[in-house]
Image (cartoon, rainbow, N blue to C red):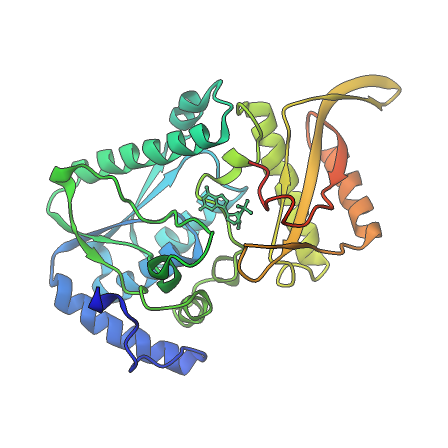
Length: 326
Ligand code: XMP
């Protein structure tokens, strides 16, 4: 327990200089811990796992094996960005697993939200386990655990810990960020040269778009969530809302409504826009998005996204709504 308390000697990392000092110390510690052995890391592309990956690549190069599982529920462009940054730019030892079909077939006809989460979590461990078994001589598992995960203070559910691996696949843990707060992790990521889009990414749940494609996931609605989310993100970035709003995304429910397009009757899905601000995710307020911008986004979504004929804006704070819809 004792080594799970942030050491008083660790100053708050608020500048690139302090981040560089932290990085140098961690490189020494990681080298001392793992020597020339191999380390496995589940790299989701989120802030924490990306910063751990970049740090370990700096410390031990190709001895960290980064496994990126694309479960088909990531946002538009995310798997490509992981490959671009880690494989192309940082020359990482990256294993990219395209598990989209596998996840989607497991999720077919499953509509209960917690059941969906369980399936996604369990399948992730199974895919990761299979990859781990293919690799020889791995003794360590790196994780993007951060201090709030240890303190268990927030309702933001940790998704980067690959708990649940079978007994014969237990590794010694490498957790270089375990005493850092999120803002410090971002400063370290910046100092490591990771792109802003990765370092300042808004929170994204482990089950990904799976909990934003409501009810039983279908490919057409999943595509509508992914494409509308990409338009929303693009427009928020263009209009100065990207760093300002805490979390924003789209949701596609599992019902259709009647509409009209080119004088023809349509029967298609609505897209719901959610944009909220919060400090700790326990309560949240709704961002006052300019109406003209909402109208512009509506126009783009209804013309560019297939199978969609309406756009709604969620006005509900938390409580009574939660941030996610499932
Ligand atoms: P709610 O919907 O409970 O969300 O108001 C609070 C915060 O937690 C995120 N969230 C999750 N994160 N796995 C995660 O890793 C999950 O299953 C999950 N469910 C919600 C949500 O995006 C928000 O930031």
